[in-house]
Length: 360
Length: 101
Image 1 (tube, chains in turn red, orange):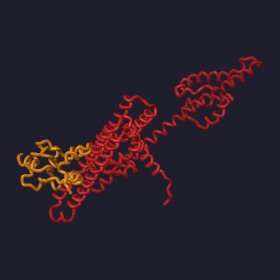
Image 2 (image 1 turned 30 degrees about the vertical axis):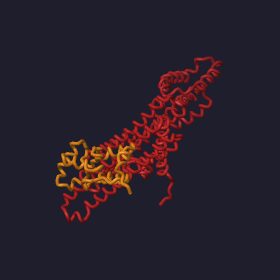
Image 3 (image 1 turned 120 degrees about the vertical axis):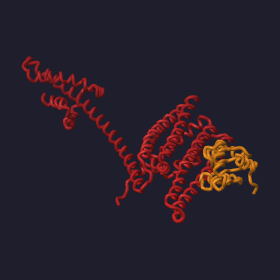
Image 4 (image 1 turned 90 degrees about the vertical axis):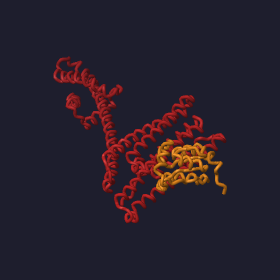
């Protein structure tokens, strides 16, 4: 009996977690005392205590003849029960530490999988660029893109946090000033996204326009590297009610102006496609030489960055105008609606990716 | 440059453009949606094109084209035009020149 009690202690001293040992000991926890689990740090302290106890126990096992026969059995029983309680307590603490270890490993694994996925996407993108014999491909392009991916991941995390904060703030009926501060952070957060996108456009405009940095459902709505501002207005409108007549008119005008600007940019993009196609087309090949033809095509491509910048400019301006038309509270509701919409869209993307599929 | 200033004041709405510039095309589309017919000068087809380009840059345009003038006053390039439009001011500025059809 006493040897069975000693075994877990030695296995811990050897630094080996034996789950099966633990299982047999866990049976004892239901008999054990109700001492609370006080965390991993206690285990270390307990270790020191344990060593003393094990010495006591070995003393016990080596010196049973120290006590009188009469007291011996009662004491032995008492001591055995105490040992059991102690062993059970140790066992619970070990189990807790083991589970915590598993949890951290699980998180680490999830993190690594995510990074692997990102690197794979990155690698795939790089591969395809190389396959196409991309002229002028250099390591610098990669680093600008990699930096953006990391920053964007943090941006999304911060966005989710802000949305939660905004939601609880609106439910808790905080002061106007506090709400104003939250709204300002929310708007500034979008502004920082546009700054990041501007840098990414300089690094690789095609990367930005492909939307590969977004989830697949978001990509479905892609218009020149992001969402249509007029669509964003439609998304948040229901959450803004009740609005004054003046507000309704202003929002309506803003949406219409945005639509007109979007149309103009869309047609400009189509023109760009046409003229790019023409510049590398067969007729051009006959007319000029390869070098000058490619140079002309390159010039056309440079215009792309301008279009992405203008599209983001539209998005930025739309946000700013909306925040001026609306009250603080309405803007807060609008930001919340927008954040929740994108969150659901991203969640939908994950669900779609994980859906069970018929084997081919 | 005299030529640029002269051309800019000759008509109500003047846009300096390049035939190859697709952003200029987008701005032209926007103006036509607003039912106005601006006077377009394609400076890449003008013999003094280079000079005109420099003059426009000196007047304060980041990109020489598109450069939009309303009532002889420089409004700016694509950025300024888009900002004004979202603000609702562009339609107001263009109202006197709206084509009657």
